[in-house]
View 1 (cartoon, rainbow, N blue to C red):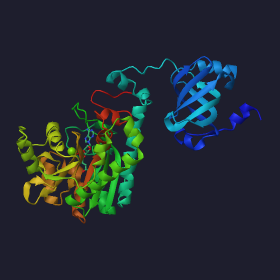
View 2 (cartoon, rainbow, N blue to C red; view 1 turned 45 degrees about the vertical axis):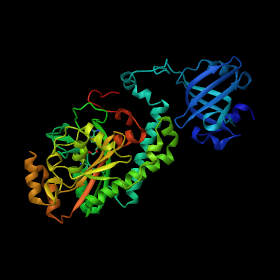
View 3 (cartoon, protein in one colour; view 1 turned 90 degrees about the vertical axis):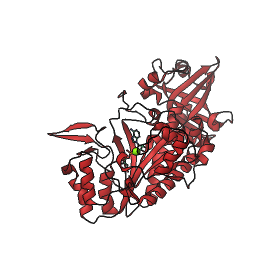
Length: 439
Ligand code: 4AD
Ligand code: MG
């Protein structure tokens, strides 16, 4: 058998699994990240999306045509390489390929992203290419792990996945940031939250959750606001505020533990101080709104009782603890129309926000839902919302109404905290922001 026939039968493997194939002739399909040559030896670093591998060829290892073509390879050129894997503890992944053939799939034009420093705008304009860099890949791998952890956790807790619609006829989280769109002869809004639909589904299945995109026409240009973000929203029939807080605590403990275990290499690439994540084990402090306000006043912040917390207030509160904290019983006036009033003080609500440590602030919002049909009707009026759009929602109070509670956890803010990112723009492959709709 000739060498090229042998190479032709080599198994296509992913670099991630290379250590299990030492001594075998294998094929790797990917892109060239670096190339150097010392005249008689050429070195290629090939990236296949699962990892990087150094590949080495001496003049005699390749045909003269392949040797010449390899010498012309530019950054991000696509190749299929074949060769024998050798253990080499000096290499990332502990394996190196002794090349037997290099097939050029396409030669890349001059690649705009270079090892020199680029500004954020340049990188965001080239987001479609920036995704190929190792840090961005690590961030998105951690994102995928967080999403898997969310789903695995909810399934294990016996919550059923129910998908909520994206086109909606009404507001869930206030009218100021609704995205309006044409729906044939009608108006529709892009969903702000699947919650109201999950309340309906919870009355059918008892425990449900949705996972999908949410849209908010946020005029705020902060490091934690996106226009399009992804949220998981569990809803629990017969669940109360303390029940969902305990569920959030278990979810976060599980998710952080899972990322620490499964994505330690990626956390390293992100230069995350993992000792801080190792401390994220419940129970997390529960702080009543009134006590949170006292803490802010003690710290000398000019906070007015009755307001919602701003970013500096959340930072002040969360910096006092090493774990996420739960702030409960917010004033009804600063929360959405559907919050159950606090029986101990009707001006407050059975609501809870979870604030992540290290200044990351709110990552979860939730609470117990209003049970009274009359009060709900009044609140819909007070919030200037059309009753007609909420008749179906009010049916949930007419037919077998039960106490119920739920929450929404944002993927991007959770990821920004766990990976230690400065800004949510890196937490999603193609961010939508106030001043960015492309690429
Ligand atoms: O606090 P929010 O607005 O709550 C709701 O939408 C409820 N209906 C959820 C529920 O009870 N089912 O949003 C929940 C979470 C926030 O804590 C945050 O993590 C994320 O969604 N979020 C955003 N993330 C990025 N950019 C934005 N503009 C966000 N708005 C909310
Ligand atoms: Mg909120």
